[in-house]
Amino acid sequence: MSAAIELITVDRLRCVVAEHDWAFDRERSAEIDAHWRARLSANPALYDGPVLLAHEVEPVRDADGGDALQVKFFHTRFSRFLAWRDFGFPGEGVQNCFSMPALRSADGAFLLGEMGVGHSAAGAIYFPAGTPDPSDIRDGFVDLEDNLLRELQEETGVARGEVRLEPRWTIALAGPRVACLRIAHCVETAAALERRITAFLAAQEKPELAGVRMAARRADLAEPRLLDFIRRFLEPLLPE
Image (cartoon, rainbow, N blue to C red; front, side):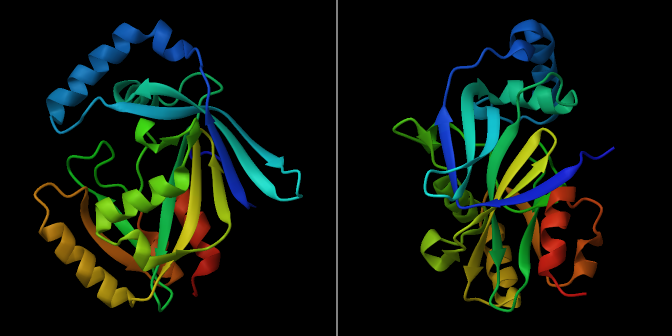
């Protein structure tokens, strides 16, 4: 059963790094290691790099009256995150918090990507995204806006200087997932974007995406591999 989904909007993110004793990792380390070996055997492209997960996510009101999302991240490794996800997100108090660019064409369609065969969620369809990692830390703060723009360029070839970000974030609270979404407007049409990004992927030796498609109407959201919170976010933004 899918987790209940709540969408809220905030003016800013306040993301810091704070130590956390993750009981799941400490108590099930041998099981996690065995799971990683099995996943790596099936998909040698996986890499056990450092990543950041959240152990506190809270909407707050800033002193100036604006709305913010306060997040405390902690350091772990991808093998730990993957096992936690594959085991059904056991335990309490830990969430996968990440950012996503909702790339919107000049004629109103949104870009969706299909995760490639080397991805840990191969075949799933959602916006470009990546789990935050230590490279996103700036002076103790986790910069999810920079993470969003970097992932967009790495996965699609669309550079940060080519998009205009809407000022507010939409936060999808979906059980253990916290998706920080930001609409990124582009001056190209949907057809032009799809052609350009398809060519970009074809030129990559190991593209992160298997392909892209443009969602222009609500009927385009019927694809069952589309993540539920992406569908909820897009439904009010697209015509029938």
